[in-house]
Amino acid sequence: MHQDQRSAIDPVCGMTVDIEHARASGLIGEHDGVTYYFCGRGCKLEFGDDPKRFLEPGYTPTM
Image (tube, rainbow, N blue to C red):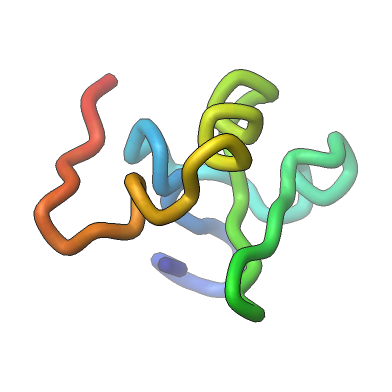
């Protein structure tokens, strides 16, 4: 989910993520051929444990 070419939405917490910062920090992940960007290590790890949970249409991120 990209807002524009420089930012994306963290699928776990809903925060806006700077794509370049995420790439430089290793805070990117992939699922089913789609790249996702994360605000921090915790969100990346949580997504990695159960990506489908965060991609369900009814999931609402809570910060």
